[in-house]
Image (tube, rainbow, N blue to C red; front, side):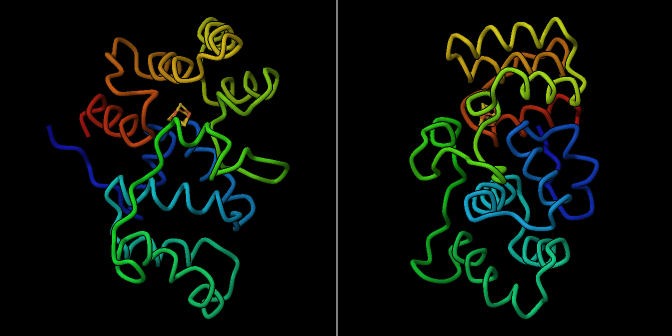
Length: 192
Ligand code: SF4
């Protein structure tokens, strides 16, 4: 089944509909700060590549959406984006991080204050997690199930429950293993 390729033109529509909470938060962080720290940049850049954004699109999108002057962007970030697409350095395209890696606490490290990377199901305390779920329109009954799962350290099942709550009657295939699987499954669900 065809899955809509992510581009700078459809991203605003697609983020709330089909991004997993980890990536949606990073996009919100980018919007509010017009900046992301190292691990946050890496997490979202790799994810967007996996969702089909071309290198040229990613370069121009982040150049426009970060406060850095264009010359500073070219100096500080353009090389890294080209690197993950395998166009410089080792010339190997870098795969997007899976859920286990994002939760591992080891490259990427656990997020601290001012960080947006990581997995909300793993890294948020119950209060902020339930606020996030409310903001993302998850019904209270599902949030309760999510909090119970997270309490039992079943973070990936928490993400599956989130997916089911926001995509009623879906199978949620592959959700909880990889953010890009979440994205693909969501696009299929919405017929996009
Ligand atoms: Fe993202 Fe995976 Fe966490 Fe879901 S379980 S929010 S896809 S890292």
